[in-house]
Length: 95
Ligand SMILES: [Zn+2]
Image 1 (cartoon, rainbow, N blue to C red):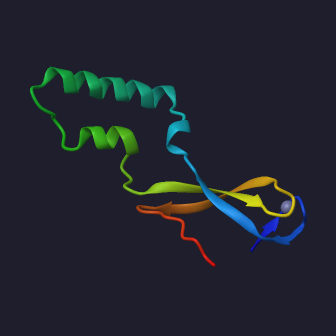
Image 2 (image 1 turned 45 degrees about the horizontal axis):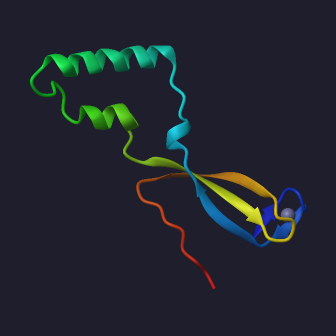
C-alpha cells in the first residue's frame, strides 16, 4: 500500500527497481581527472593505485543509490521514489 499522487489516495502498487547507474552525468572536471587516471594507468606495468577501476566506476562509495518505480494498480500510472542507499538490494514478494 502506498500513496498514489494521481488517485490522491492510498492504493496497491507493484514495485520495480530503476537502474540509476547508467544515467549518471559527470562534470567536465571529473571527466578530465578520469582521463588523467586512465593515462597514468596506461603508462605503468600495473596499477599505481589499488582498485583504480572500482574507484572510477563508483567513486569512493561502495553502496549504490536505489530508485524504486511504483505502478498504481487502480489507475495504472507510474511514479518514482528514492529508496536511499544500500550495498545489496532485493525486492521480495508479499502475499
Ligand atoms: Zn493511482
